[in-house]
Amino acid sequence: MDLVQLLGAPSWRLPPGVLAVLDLPRRRRELAALFSWAIPNQDAIDTVARHAPIVECGAGMAYWSALLRASGVDAIACDVRPPGGRVPNPFHPVAHRPWMTVEPAASVSATRQHSARTMLLSWPPYDDDDASYSALRAPTRARW
Image 1 (tube, rainbow, N blue to C red):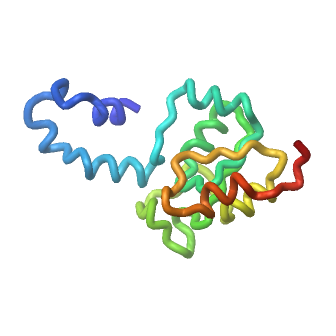
Image 2: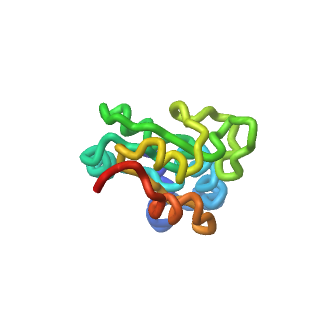
Image 3: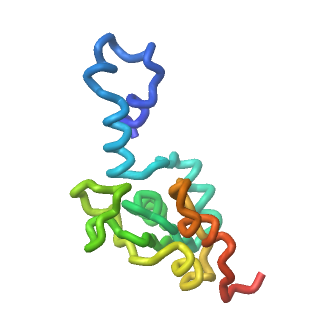
């Protein structure tokens, strides 16, 4: 989190020359590939935890789910292309293994399979309705 806060600091707060050395756009892509496209603080984890159990759809590296589990929350991570699997995940091309096990499942399938869980979508791809909108509209076995 210290690195995220440093990289997110206003440029006027960084020592001279640091911006050029850090290459902030490149660091941002590296952090997103290794962790998540949105990095939660404790308040976010606590808010999501109130809706447990959780199924994280499009989990990528499963960073959110790993943080939830570390806080004692029942969370499952799913992604249509788990990083490190047979099919490359273009959003997480790093050699690092996910932060926890990621079940191979599309968002709609994961939502239906885990219908008793609250679905967590954190920054789904903007151009992929199957990863987000379709999952939100998918009929489940759950009764409302």
